[in-house]
Image 1 (cartoon, rainbow over the protein chains, first blue to last red):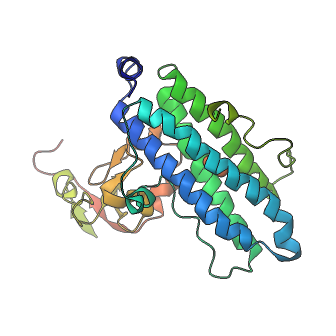
Image 2: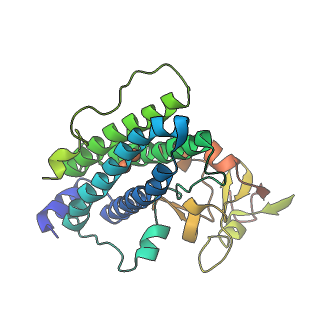
Length: 183
Length: 82
Ligand SMILES: [Fe+2]
Ligand SMILES: [Fe+2]
């Protein structure tokens, strides 16, 4: 634990216990999403599915990066991961992104993907709101992750045809916003 | 429809296997089946067994995240509540 780091955040008026719990819950969401997206990705086959596979893979890898990026901050603030991974799974900030009953229904897979990203967008917005102007490092991290989650949501939403597309898929390295926390 | 006071609502806190109820705008919703209300807390910030009408203003979502759950009663004022 980084003692003064935690003290600064407490003194700024943040409930550090709650913030840490929220960070752990979101770390659980990232790692479980990484797992469930693996299953979604392998089921994205056929003419429709293959066109989505690349984007699902980028979102999957970036979610794993989000997990990695969150961990140091959790421990700096005096938090820890649960010893039992089953507990970790069940405390996720987002529901499991399970494969739909009909795994050939690409549209249903897309809806699972977009809902998972929307949950993440809400979660990091909440963390940004809680830490803005108070816990600069957590805010910086949550904002970096939020930037990527918003892009993930947009990709899948545009594939669903919810509106005109303002995005291309990721160019260059993955996690352009979060990479500074991964070095 | 069943009528619950704030103190009766408190018993449905989702802990120890008890059902998780939350009140919103005078109605009581059963959120026990929700993954996001496991153990009677939601996103580490909100507790079941309470009236969440004011708290929803701080949430990063609208009230559809409450109103989509089954209504199990209405919230009424108890004898010592005003
Ligand atoms: Fe993520
Ligand atoms: Fe994501």
